[in-house]
Length: 392
Image (cartoon, rainbow, N blue to C red):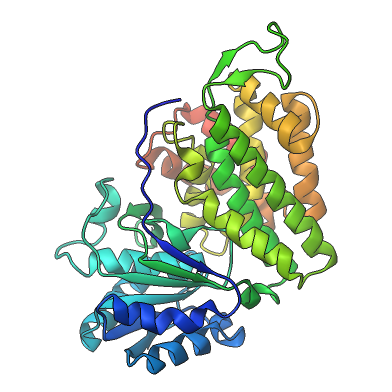
């Protein structure tokens, strides 16, 4: 296991009715005025927005809205949130919504304290240390944005969907009740997103002992055995939760398990000792939705992740075999990829990028965008092109 430092200071309040304590927590952080960031209306319909502002008002915290954040959030939305903060003289943000809303608030929290081109924070690839406080009230579970410092934003003019890293939110208020009416297709997209966050780390293990030769049960032993076993348990939990939701869409236990698994999937714990993980599939997806904003992140990963695995399977055989055995219950890397595809098919996830109108004419631009991504892919251009072609 590689050396690591783990630190996640986000306070998580989880369960029914926890948003009632939001206002007091914001006030305790020294804030008297906040901007409440939200999307297109889902947060209001599920009750989260109303509960959040009721709690703020009860604690004497003034608030001003900044609504209309789009899926695959863009830089213009970030700048709107920054301006709302300045106009209101507010001290922080309360993000009520899904990953796009929370990412917008987190990016704005960094940009609000800096002059110059806000896109510089996305190109320099260093972690910002200064930001105004952010509090999150998730209404979807998939991105893990409620308890990490990453914000993924699209620069529409440049067709670049890149990430900024800054402080984690001060506190997250996670009530699964707000997610009970989330449509199954959307819940599946969120679940796939959560799974791929874990998988980006889980494919980076380092085999160190031939367990068969030593007669140790369970196959190859890895340097990061504890972390990998934890990650596999999270993947199995997400799969089981979705299977319950397919039959009982409003089941609280399944919604709650999925919500907590999604948060754990990208709070830092799943990557300790793994040297940062892979993240190639996310770079590929960011190239796609950077060019085609109508493409939803999670479902696109359901297409791209298996295509990437097929391309690199021979280079990750021990790791892919382990995932096949411990997550999908089959033997062999190829069979594991097939089992993943079959599961996504059963859940109704699309199989091809063509489902969103992505055609062959887009491939040169997608390849360029993927290779320009700030984190190196470690793949030759022809291999990146092959993955995109196989995904069409």
